[in-house]
Length: 239
Image 1 (cartoon, helix red, strand yellow):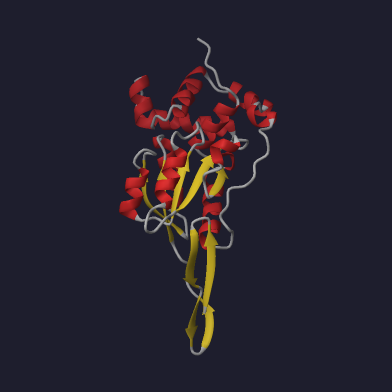
Image 2 (image 1 turned 90 degrees about the horizontal axis):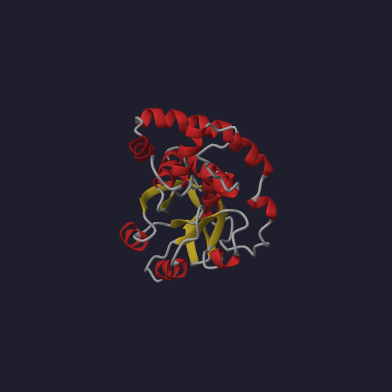
């Protein structure tokens, strides 16, 4: 028995059942491959760690946004996640067009902040909000890749003021020490723990401890969520 699914890239057919003893039973879940494209190494790290325990998504590799098409041609993933969670992605329409022109085009998923302008998201097959965290993003990608959900970029509402100025976020950020705020700004800039340590003359383990305290104080689960919270609250470090 065959069950067809439709994505924004066309129709794909997956075998959903196998016969055992003349009876049909569900086939094992299909594992889909994912490429994470971002210019921020901490986003690569967050998704690599989360995918270690994912059931139906396998990391094919990570890439910069500039190189993602070449990497996708080599790895032939089912899904490409394009990161625009901290800043709009330059050249997004051209990237998506090139992905769709491949012999085996992947699903083009875009990671953004909630309230992103329509012009920033209208080219992707599916748009995901980074605010909900990496685990939630992966669950949504698993659902889309499975065929249960038809992949389509949603019609967006105008950005809400609450998305950009969260009083609670400001309050949580105010609990950070000067050093923690300095480290958070470097995280927003895309630096890894090792790069932060080199910049601030600290060991990577010390940076890791600071990052752990930052996540706890901001009540978030990953560096990408911390960076988004900082951008939303317009974090500033006063000298």
